[in-house]
Length: 265
Image (cartoon, rainbow, N blue to C red; front, side):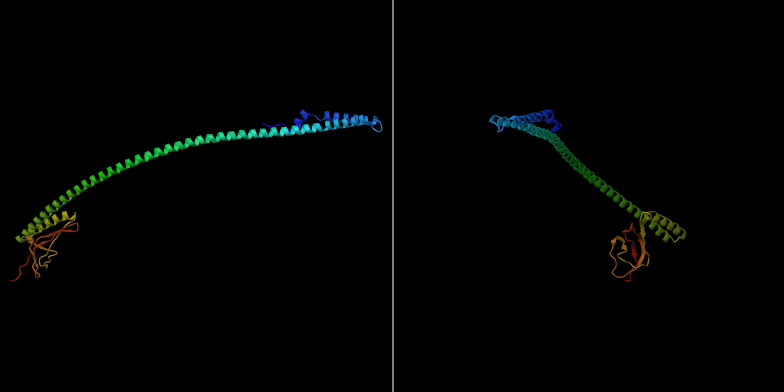
C-alpha cells in the first residue's frame, strides 16, 4: 500500500493563502491604526497595535505549526504502515517456516520408514543368502561325495581293466614263448605280429610293456623273480623273460618276471 506524498496531503487539507490574507489584513489594520493614532499613542492604541501584531503573527505561525503537525502525523502513519508490512512479511515467513518444518518432518518420517524397510529387506536377503549358501554347501558336499564314489568306481574299474589286460598280454606272451620253443619260423613270426598288435592297442591309452632281455644283468630294482623270490647276492645274468613288466601312464605296475641263469655249484 503506497502512502500519498506529504506536500500534496498538506495542500489539500490546509491551504496557506487564507492565512496569508488574514496576516496581511491584520498588518494593514495595524498600519492603519498607527497612522490614525495620536502622538504619543494612548494605551488603547498600543493595545490595538499589539493585538493586531499578535493576531498577524498567529495567522502566520498557525499554518506552519499545523503543517509540521500533519507532517509528523503522516510520518508516523508511514512508519506504522511500514511496520505493519514488515509484521505481515514476518507472519508469511513464519508460515513458510512452519510449512517447511512440517514437510521436513514428513521427509524424516518417510526416510525412517524407508530405512526400516531397507533394514528388513537386508535382513531377509541375509537370511536367504545364508540359507542358499547352506544349500549350495550341502549340494557341493553331496556332489563331491557322488564324484568321489564315481572316481572310486572308475579307479576300481580301471584297476580291474588293467589286471585283465595284463593277464591277457601275459597269455599272449606265453603263447609267443611256446611258438619260439616250437622252432617254426613262420609260426614265430605270426605269433610275434599278433603279440605286437595286442600290445599296440593298450599302448594307445598309456599301457606299455617293459621287456627284459636274455643275458642282461639282473637288477632287483628293475626285475623280479617268480613267486617274489629273493634275488641272489652275487651278480647274475637273466636267462629269459617269463612275463614282461608294465607301466601305465608313466607309473610302474609290475617289474618284468625273469628267470636267472644257473650258478656254478
